[in-house]
Image 1 (cartoon, rainbow, N blue to C red):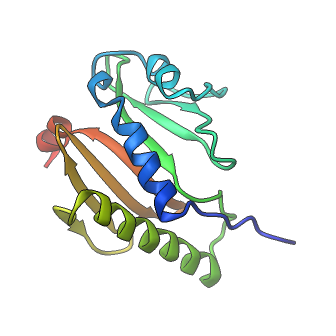
Image 2 (tube, rainbow, N blue to C red):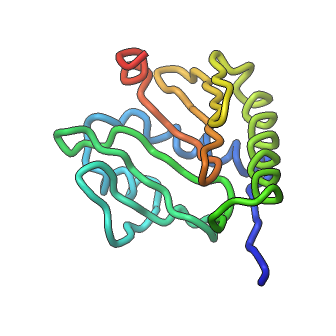
Length: 157
């Protein structure tokens, strides 16, 4: 059985980051559907009180719009590689690390050195971009780019 192992190039990750940064002024103020409409990403079925899902048009995976308790959009989360099967294998772990490395180098070249690094089983890099924070995380199921309002992270840190 063949496994779909596609990842965005560094340039594609930077373009994706720049695209989601355009909706930063809307976070905390509008419903997730307005964020999706602004990005041109159609809503997908499902969702919950915590997140709504949409198709970012990458050809794999789904993006999520995290929600505040009042239902306004809080964060945008987008995968940068294809959905991988579980359980993981060394080959899949290596692929996730490659995706994290490629994207990290590209985001650093575009936005400067990350201001925060979290090591461990789920490493994260954070870049401050104006009133926004871009976070890239290598998580158990994949590598994702997050867009946050800076004030939301400052309250949590």
